Image 1 (cartoon, rainbow, N blue to C red):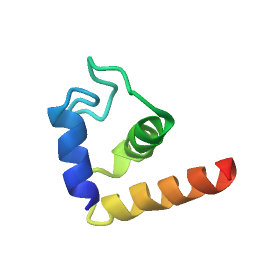
Image 2 (tube, rainbow, N blue to C red):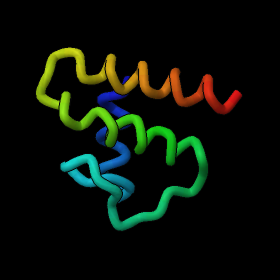
Image 3 (cartoon, helix red, strand yellow):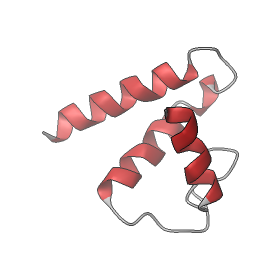
Image 4 (cartoon, helix red, strand yellow):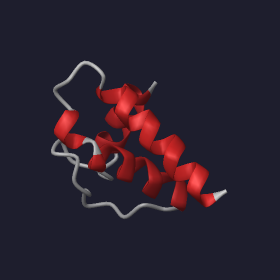
Length: 66
């Protein structure tokens, strides 16, 4: 699922292939949190567990905001 989210973020211009913010500005906090999850874990992007790291970051960040 996160792989599809990553593709959609890139295709929509919200994020580029280097996991940096794209040319389109995020519309809401949810998209900002998704972008942050990919960005903070980009150093693991070539590892098998990359999407697990992203998911863990999203859970941790959402827990902080509840």
